[in-house]
Image 1 (cartoon, protein in one colour):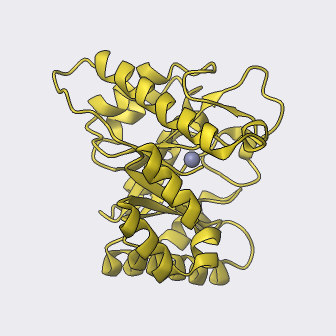
Image 2 (image 1 turned 90 degrees about the vertical axis):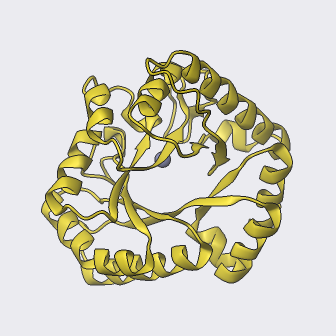
Length: 261
Ligand code: ZN
């Protein structure tokens, strides 16, 4: 993680999405120090949840530990993936972790996934995630908008407006045609997703945080990481510039970029 953080800073990223395994391997305090000395803001700690699966008590305890780790890292959010199946079980898990989240000042950011991830998620649309978030109604419960997972949903524009003020993070990757595996995402601007148009909607709905590159790709992982990360930085900047240009509102705020790949 230390080398990745240093690379992100060198390439001009403003933030870093932290994976629990990487922070755990380095140690949470050392991970926080590495981010601080590189001048990077942690966007979120990834991931916890899977409350719909058996052994929910253990998963709730794990999420509580992750909330504490996120607070120690200085990350404002913990990404939550629901697990497959019964959404009522997700709600139960969230309600049990939320007191810790509120006390620690860490938002639980529920991330809906594309239906091809049905093994991992019961939430496939932003509206489905917002239904849970609104039913619970805590200010510490928010959503993560991953455009790679959500772009296909024709209800997304309305859902983005509905999500205004509750978006904790925005993940960006493009859809490779043809997609050959679950680890086959395309660089932003190099696939089938109208990313600039969708990002303009995200910004119009009031999101002012960072955009995170999350290009999970076996193909790109086999290449020189410095080169690939530089591509991600420049791709994200290009898409953000296009999005800002196509916004309907008058704001000229420019999003900053971070990396969580
Ligand atoms: Zn994501």
